[in-house]
Amino acid sequence: MEEISADQLASQLYQEGISNFESGNYQQSIALLERARDLAILETDLGGDISIWLANAHDAAGKTEEAIAICRSLKKHPVNKVRKSARYVLGILTAPPLSKLEGVVSEVPILRSPDSYQSKPVPTSKGNSNANQKPFREVSLEKPIPVDSSSMNKFLLLAIAVFSSLLAFWATK
Image (tube, rainbow, N blue to C red; front, side, top):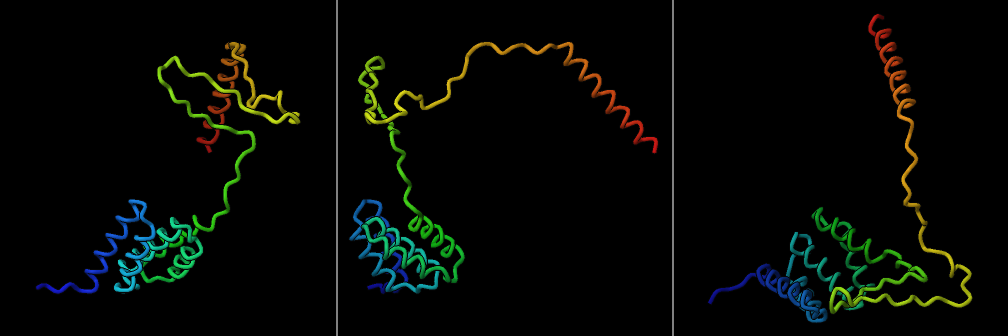
């Protein structure tokens, strides 16, 4: 019978933990990753990776404070890649929540056929003074007024003449 080293067992538990995480079994993932972390040498690449995944599993399970604590403990990890990952995850976990814009609604229609889509009116509050305002600036679709090409040509010729004079003056010095 072949003996398995602690590092090999930690690696196997780590892979199972990732698999459970990806399947949405966060509690099982946490249990497996904690066992893997107990067996691994934390200062190694594997130990750091296990800890990062453990932080992600804790966050996914709604235990964000534990995830933040794990990431903070990895700030001085000897492996640069682990430190970077910990800072990245910590930034996401501690970022302020995004505010929702009031009155902004995105509608994703379910189409049965290309001609079946009908837009639904967006509900607005009755006391809203901006109800008649459009959410965008209207732009005229008229043709732009053409620029007089003879005046443009004169300007271009003058600019070329001035530039040539300056270049000739500079070259003779």
